[in-house]
Image (cartoon, rainbow, N blue to C red):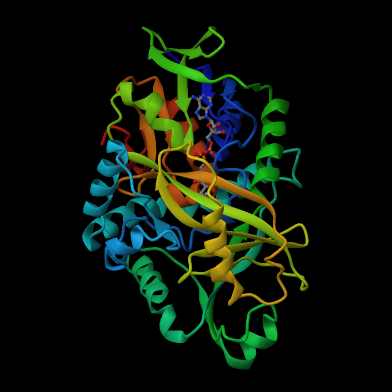
Length: 416
Ligand SMILES: Cc1cc2nc3c(=O)[nH]c(=O)nc-3n(C[C@H](O)[C@H](O)[C@H](O)COP(=O)(O)OP(=O)(O)OC[C@H]3O[C@@H](n4cnc5c(N)ncnc54)[C@H](O)[C@@H]3O)c2cc1C
């Protein structure tokens, strides 16, 4: 089989950039084609957690327990707007079928190798790069906080299930004076917390910009503002058709287009149903210096220290990719967060943003060859694409250059 010496990577989110970086390090010539600019999709305004201790498959029994009714409530953290879109309805039906305990256990086992390699994936890139400051992930615990101890039972069960599946997470419980004394920015009504130790976080946009600089420094070509219309196999590789009429030939193509992936991948035999799990975020100033992420699991709100304040992120709105920003979803986050945080100015928000989490019907990413062995997909990382970006890039680059598919990637086959 022909050696892979040139690859087109479609998409410059965390997954595309990480894949490009690893391919370049393996001596492959790389062109990234991006319809917009660096991190124009979900990789821009997300919470930036590298949290293998929390990364689990999205379809789980509690989603059904939570109630189909709440899914249509606009203020609910998980919301499916009324739709006649057949693709979304198919997605919702298939997703619901995957919300079983046994399916969760199988998927969790498949994700474990990615969880185990996630932090190392970040360390590998920062230790071997020139732009080390922008590429350094900060170590910090994630503080999961609750109004009451009983509210924490779902998270505790989930952490126990992760351990039963073979994962590891160190945690510490806090309540009463310990909690109030150490975390003055929690509202006094918040009476119980679990500190998840040894996690990391980044400013995702700055990280992607630094990684793009690193890709350029390694000789990669970045072409912005050009949409890929199609990718087709040739006898020895693939051609990529661009919106400007040009075609680019290469030995292989990696489609890393996040929530846009089904458009390009459908004709390549990828039938796994996908949707955009749109999340929102904004920035708010904080009176106190906060140096670690805070998670409110019951409200599904994630807070990350950024620029002397907090990025507050949340909600999951299942739609196609491109629907307009809906300010009522931000209002729903603010309403929930008001009772949880103290000294954080939620009324004067900046940088309100919406981005599409690339979610799949079974909660597993799509990583591997399509029906054409030279055209790969690396997408569908859902809630955890930041955590899994660098490790995905490494696995894809190694598999493409060695022409050997590691067993770790088999459960993620885009053709499953
Ligand atoms: C509110 C929120 C909070 C989150 N928090 C976390 C977190 O704390 N930790 C975590 O691990 N994950 C988190 N995530 C999930 C994470 O953001 C995503 O899983 C991840 O960014 C996906 O990266 P990606 O590179 O696959 O896709 P994207 O970042 O969406 O990149 C895809 C790129 O492809 C480009 N593209 C698409 N189609 C084409 C085309 N035809 N031609 C050329 N270019 C194209 C797009 O413009 C885009 O730039 C969060 C997501 C949201 C929305």
